[in-house]
Image 1 (cartoon, rainbow, N blue to C red):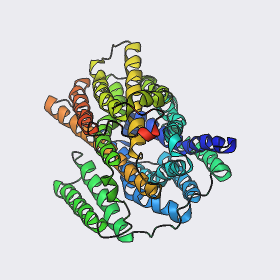
Image 2: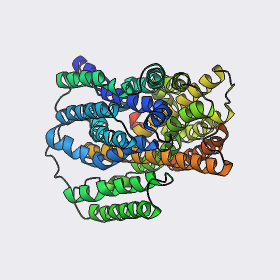
Image 3: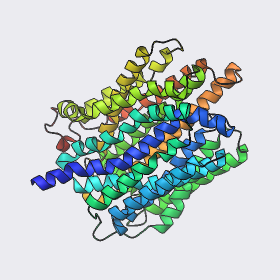
Image 4: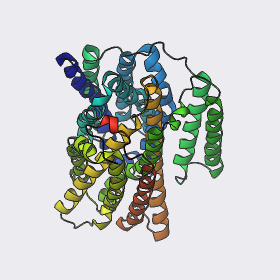
Amino acid sequence: MSLRAQIRARLMPLIVAVALLMETLDANVISTSLPEIARDLGTSPIHLKLALTSYMLALAIFIPASGWAADRFGARPIFRLAIAVFAAGSIACGAATSLESLVAARILQGIGGSMMVPVGRLIVLRTTPRSELVNALAWLTVPALIGPVLGPLLGGFITTYWDWRWIFWINIPIAALGMVLVSLFVPQVTAEPPRPFDLRGFLLLGPGLGAVLTGVTLAGLNLSSPLWMAGFTLGGGLLIAAYVAHARKVAEPLVDLGLLRIPTFRIAALGGTFFRIGAGARPFLLPLLFQIGFAMTPFQSGALTFAAGLGAMTMKFVAKPILDRFGFRRVLIANAAISAVLMLLPILFTATTPWVLIVVPLFVAGVGWSLQFTAINAIAYAEVPAARMSSATSFNSVLQQLSGSIGITVAAFGLTGMQAMSGHATLSATDFAPVFILMAAVALLSAPIFARLARDAGGGMLKRRPAR
């Protein structure tokens, strides 16, 4: 590889990561600020999960079209447009005056994010040699991991000492920088020839996923009748089933279900879904535990939860050597169990626990979660042909958003149930322990799934294939 090509291979993930930084920063600042936003808008912190899941709902609906749009119009203009739409949604979030207006603004953000993240990842996948893919994915996420590190601190500081609305408006300068860098350095990446758009598939899958997520999200919030919730969920399920039948009949489906025939992709998708459901509830649960259970300020809460992001960033620098040494299969199995145990650590926290005994365990937990996500994301694409990369990134992104939304919903269900069983008028610190246990158990279910991987799975992406 020439020097110029090496520079571009290293520079491209960093440029794309500017957009990922904006998204992860946004996700982490809002998680830290949920209790204060709920008070200001006059709603329950558990009801405000809609601000998180509505974003994921928009992602699930529009992500399936992201791969086709990038193939048809080019990854660069779509990526640039997505950043602009996300920034517009951020402005609207900061101007929201009710739960309904905040949810609507988050949906607009989600429309931008639905193409910003998967198309950005596609740019990296298509401009990086397969032998450099693990390093590229690691570099791609390093700047983005600044979000989990700075997000809780920044969001907590702004919410405590200023106004929570500015947690969204800080996205604007990041978006401006990202659009400039994309215009200057990102090449035009298209498919030759671009595949036709599966309009019928889009009209089945997008609304189907949206309806299911709407029904699941509304459950337990007393915001709609059980009949409406069941109607959304059942109707969405029927649309998804119709899409599955449709996808088997067309040559170029919107989301290629045939990818599940690839062993590494199928196992990464299934195991990764269970792990993300368990781990995805963490950003929702920890701020509520610290601020409502332990009566901390948003800034105090963010000063503790940032440790997990710092641990995640640290792991990105050593993930490749660990995978080179032990191989994907052994790392995914062992680390799933270790990470599940680490999810139980908040059970031991109390309002009087010294800060160092909270920060250090959360740092270690962040290390474990980061290694698992890096390995899952890399092994998913180990055997995917280049021609099917855009469909694979769309498929994988949809699963990630679905699992994250389900994780938050299950955690909210658990908290509501524990509050009702305990008879507390508001959430108490004692309501959280069973929910952390539940989410750890779900994450642990991924270990036997990863055990189905071949011993040398993903060996072509490693410097040295692990011994059989």
